[in-house]
Length: 218
Image (cartoon, rainbow, N blue to C red; front, side, top):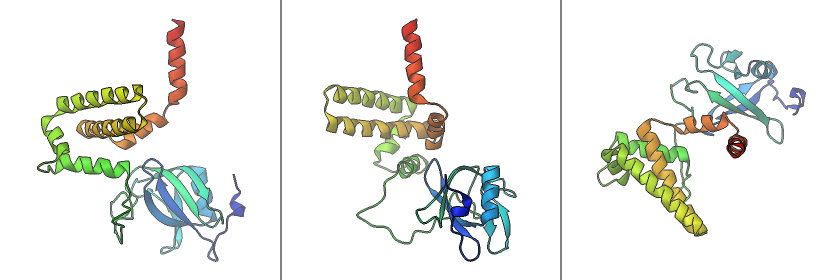
């Protein structure tokens, strides 16, 4: 851990803070902190910034209720910028959007970024805005039983491929399973954040080992 005194604040006593959702890894906003607001942030575990327009301290969420609970604060190699990982209670932007970054400027046609968040939003769109000829829309139209049947089939195919020690086929089948599980998640109203928080709330490996030991003892 480095000391606050090691950070390089600019001539106005400010340091930029890039605020990132610790679960989705989405950049929420970029704000500025001075030494006082940084200390308050660390003491309260909530983001506190320096408003350059109002020239005053600004505890995010104090009026809106959209607090940002700090998971970690990390400085860059030059110690003149911060990344603040948070768990937000609500939208980061005063416009009511999750992130302040909502205006695309340019995107490569060849190197489009893939994310689970983007995929699950696309799947969700096939339910809320059905598309003729879409397999995903077809699954939603058929309902829960059909979706569960596909999840079961894909589980079996993963097992068969893995048992055959066919890595390429196993990867292919796991991807199929992941997709169908995401369809199930949307059908059941489960978000990626729900799964992330569940995994983060427990030590999966240690708990499983303990369960196996307990079973073995019996």
